[in-house]
Image 1 (cartoon, rainbow, N blue to C red):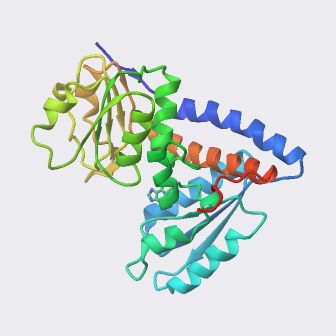
Image 2: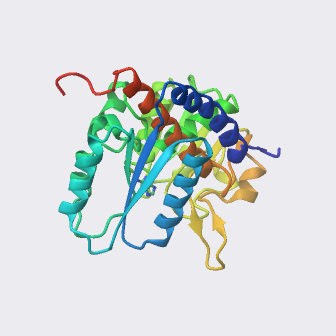
Image 3: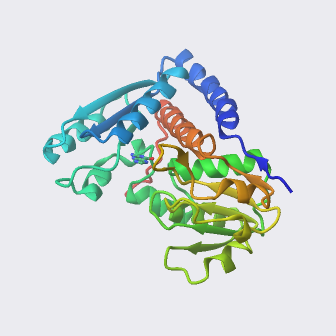
Length: 292
Ligand code: GUN
């Protein structure tokens, strides 16, 4: 068997075109969706991500603004900026690029972002909403994984799903989203004994640990849908995922490549969350529940 390659570039392009229609409709009503991105320090990867996010916004007509701070920025200044953006009517989404320098309390920063503008979905209220089944903004990467699985019509209902990785950004929300779609979900970690005994049973396997080659073809159930969230740079500068692509391709039924798989979908879902936020603001139906 040779896996069908799940083409994140193509799915992202088609999905962005659909969201652009909604941006155009908002603009006809006089509303331009707006995203504010805060970046602190000189992390080169973060700079590339932020640039890509801003470019993706402008391609579908979303206003974006980048607020840059030096590595030694005072947390109080960044908190003050977030508070100002929370009440800025031109801004519907606020994103603080991670990681932050050591002087920052990341939880404090994330909890300061208004739940109604938390398009990254990292606020505790939004993460908690995933458990309750009513998250205002699903976190972009696992949301993108769900979108690519849906695009390729992968059955989730009753499927055995295994998530390798338990980060707050990907693994844990991913598991909850799969559970919400009636998959039977296992979460594995770097400490899991006999990882292959889990992954070999997975109809749907999502891998997000940041370790190249952690999953090889022999650990995959024949015909499974395998989504590789890892982005790792090898010594010779090549980008690779967590899944050994060639051996996986020979066994899996569906497989995402790296690059060109989940990456473009993550940014697409950020656009989706921003547009949806603007739509909610436009009709006065922001997501935060009364009294919370
Ligand atoms: N750093 C790495 N990935 C992300 C992301 O999705 N959002 C933010 N804010 N920072 C990140």
